[in-house]
Length: 104
Image (cartoon, rainbow, N blue to C red; front, side):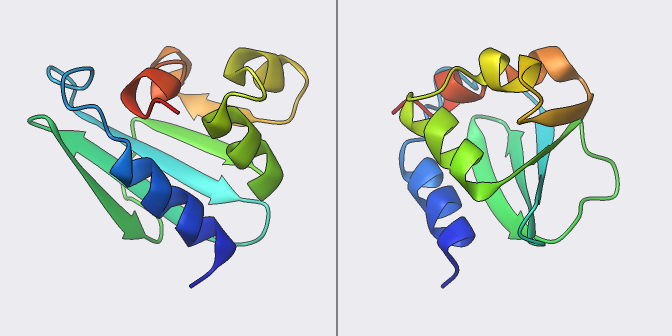
């Protein structure tokens, strides 16, 4: 298993269905390491799939270390975005909810 996939699997284990209760969204992650994953959230459930989604709600580009730092709470997601460590396209405000949906 790739290190990138391991991070996403860990995120799935921390999924907070209450935070995502009324959400219907697809988070596309394009990793600088060349891997692509998307998280689909609907009806209080979350599913991880490899590859690129046809119509993501928000697309986030970053490297593995940035993903790890943001999801562990070591780096604030908005700060990472402002520093250019995360590039986002689509519903950027939705991306700010990632650490609430997947608390560390």
